[in-house]
Every structure is written in C-alpha cells, then in structure tokens.
Length: 147
Image 1 (cartoon, rainbow, N blue to C red):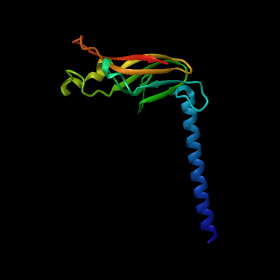
Image 2: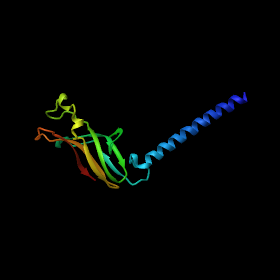
Image 3: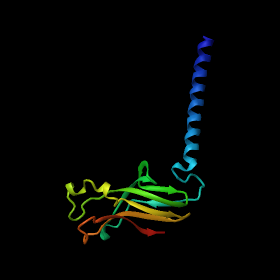
C-alpha cells in the first residue's frame, strides 16, 4: 500500500528531523557558556581527579559541579580556559580515623570546593586531603600538582 509506506517514511523522516533539531538546540545551549566543556579543537585545560597521593593523605575525587551547576560525576574534565569554582566528592577509603558516621554531612562543610584558573595545555590534579593534625574540618580539596 503506497499510502502507508509514504506515511511511515514521513514518520521516520520527521522523527529524524526532530532528533537533529534537539541535538542542535543542546549543542547551542552548551556553547552558550552554561557548562564550559572544551570540545574538539577548543583550547583546553584538564582537571584530573583520579589517582591522588595516598602516602600524603590525598585521595581521588569525582567532579560534581562547575560554578554551582550540577554535572554528571566525572573523574576528568576538559574545560575552556577561565576561572571556575569546582565542587567535588571525595572517593575516600581506609583513611585513618575515618568512621562511617563521621563522613555524614561533610558535603555541607564547604571542604569540597576549590577555585581553579584553567590555562590552555595544563593538567591540574585535584584531590581530597586529610590533615590529621586538625581535629575540626580535617578535610580539604587541594590542587596538588600542575603539569
């Protein structure tokens, strides 16, 4: 039946057009500066949260917010040059003196934020540091290496 084939083809074509329009709108929204991810050949700096330096009480992190905007948890961020407030969640395991009950509420203490000035071509290693000498607020987010 020719009419049905045309209808199905139009439906698929219309669906494809709608999908492409949605992707274009999302790409335009991302390029407006809402979330400053670097793409393709954009100049970029890299924030790295994995690794850490356990011997220095620095633990890995995942990045959860950029300038107050929630992002999908990531261990690595490619960002356009600029200044950003980054919020992280520590991936802390087996820290001395850490009890399950003591880890609650740490998100609200502000220890999980850091301001980073990103420059093109640089790699910024960020982690969660435990200062065992401090009894109040022993955790802080640190930039421990720039390459």
